[in-house]
Length: 157
Image 1 (cartoon, rainbow, N blue to C red):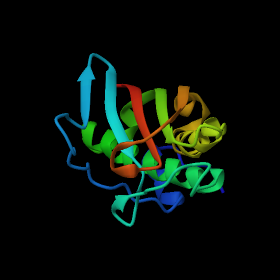
Image 2 (cartoon, one colour):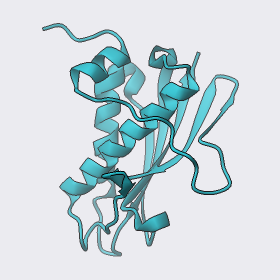
Image 3 (cartoon, rainbow, N blue to C red):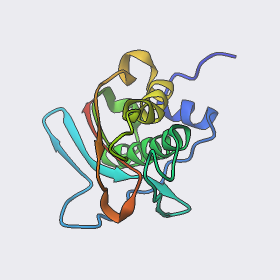
């Protein structure tokens, strides 16, 4: 079986349907484009349509955190798609992710949690376009008690 050539085809092959852009929960916009860069606001992890609440190292383990980060990547791609008129092929590069992981002071696997998102971007956009710079931080709390929040910068046409 050959690898699909567009991000949309890869998403379909993975059985992923992108959500509509979420309404911002505060005074900001979902994305801002300046030149060829698209800055996508932080998205929190959601489960069953609500904030995916938890703290890594206390009520959640790394594997569940990776699932939350993957769910965020899907939401981020939904926002990217909306910003690009439904055409993810206009993404030239996922430039950077910044990941905030709600975690206990002794938890040290924030980078592994964030792999849940990074891996999916690689699967959907391919190694060259999907590979990105990244930061992963442990934080004391995230809005609504969410376990993970991720923001993204992409280069686009």
